[in-house]
Image (tube, rainbow, N blue to C red; front, side, top):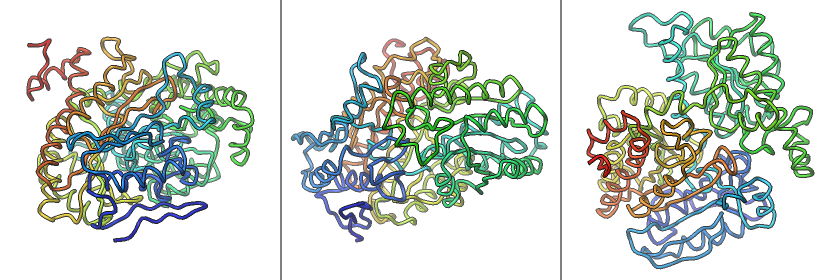
Length: 574
């Protein structure tokens, strides 16, 4: 086994590989390895600062907390549960084997105190950290973690353009071209989440121009083949993506610049007929104004300026966001398909003084909600062995398990060919109610039969069909107006805790910011045992079932159909 590797000073962290345990069971070895994987330099944005992604999303609160958590996980018994409060281990209690081994709560503040200034005060005093979604719940798998959801979103965008007759020169009947062939997408933000966008577009055969202020982010995504090339000359970048669009060829170019400045300039060129953008979106770290660089401040000055005057920096950032969002709205006025990809930039722009900020929709109500009604959402897994061949085995097994799902097959084939692993080998795909439980049991059987070399960790994003209340993203424009009802993620965490998850988390803020969302996550371990099989069947049925009942309750006909077809019991419908 390659041992866990970290030192003093910069403390590079790398999760153990192989089959030898450092903890007392795989149920505690798994969270130990996944925590360390989150902080692997291949995975994390700023591992020395414990930041995994999203500008501020941390895995643990401090290095002292990291040491205490890892030490505790190594010594815990199979009937004990570790409690982690905003990245700090606060207690271990005796529970039982069906209970989670770890329970985590991150950045949760009482309503009237749920503001960025209050959070930052507590963070500065060492009392809290921002867990983002999968950073503080130890199931981040690099940019791949959001890739398939982004791929699904952009596929839906292309299908909508074609259905509305807005697709330029639609492909001939029987063509194997992706739904974005012949289109050009403009977007911003190429960090840990946004970095999935260019590959998601090109996998759908579209051309993409992505703007980021930090050239190192673009170079990192290019180095992992999420991005095809980087340009520092805007004319050259436009020429390259326009050629790809004209040739109906998937190709992405990253341009080094500030989106608040570049988007208005590209809008001018769009209106002048110099270039035509069909799709416009954004995934900068706008959820936290200190993670969005305002115009007039360099990348080198960024963190110093933000730390010196957080309130002043926030106002400058919001003013710049207002300029970027104004350009996005005017792109929509000029005929482009425009959507918010879930980072609260519209509300920040409104705060910055732009009144039309909400004139384009969020991606969930525009494209994804029908999938949520079926309990469909991100299903991800990680090979604890560290051997990429284990992922190849699971890819093949999933395709055999769902032979009729050619869309899923296309995704898995593309991921195997195009996606480079970051940290422990991992995969993600979207599966729905009934499908996730079948996949979990299949993986457990692969472990039991020795077809993979070590247990498989199974988790998901917190962005799921029934695990989040987020009025500017996942629960925007609910049919019954229940956008801000936050009982659902709490119920989700409770049912997952009761159903055999290995670790469960409940967070505040996520990808949209303090005061704007509550969300829950769950992770389980397929270790090949009969007990794991029992747990996985319940957990991976009940967790996506939350998405079905959430949307039944909100009045979606498709969710009612799914509940009736698949036997989801709804007391008020009996």
